[in-house]
Amino acid sequence: MTESPTDMGLNASIAVTSPPMDLSQEVVRLFDAHHRAIFGYLYRMVGEDRELAEELTQETFLKAFEARHQLPEIANPRAWLYRIATNLAFNAHKRRRRFRWLPWSREVETHGPQGALQAAETRVDLERALGELPPSLRAPLLLSAVQGLSGREIAQALGISEGAVRTRLYRAREQLRAYLQG
Image (tube, one colour):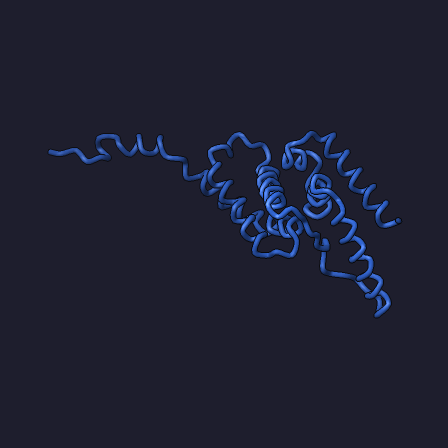
């Protein structure tokens, strides 16, 4: 009588050498939970180039999938995804040698035509001011103000200390204030 591969224990060795399926499923779960936010962050980082933002979002999750074996050691997968996305945005910036800025929200609360005009002028001024920030200050500001990441998550996402995050956020806000008042 011939033994089947299952009888010889080959399935056990295959399961040990192939990556665990739950890690692949974890990347799918991370995609489901965070792809919209990652896209929104990248869209703001690269400007109105929706196609580039979509491409970078896909690349973010492709890199996460390729590095899924690291997931068990990663304390904060959300921050890890933002770190991947930020690195990709910075690389795109190097390729394009420019960043453009989009407003944080297209929704504007207005009170009549005068309020709408004022809101539009304020948004344009804010867009210009944010566009003047270097990417090293813009990224932590976006991650904090738009994406709602904590200082610790921003530090993990950018690969810097929490003190550096606080410093960059302070400098970003001061530069915005100076630009808007001057």
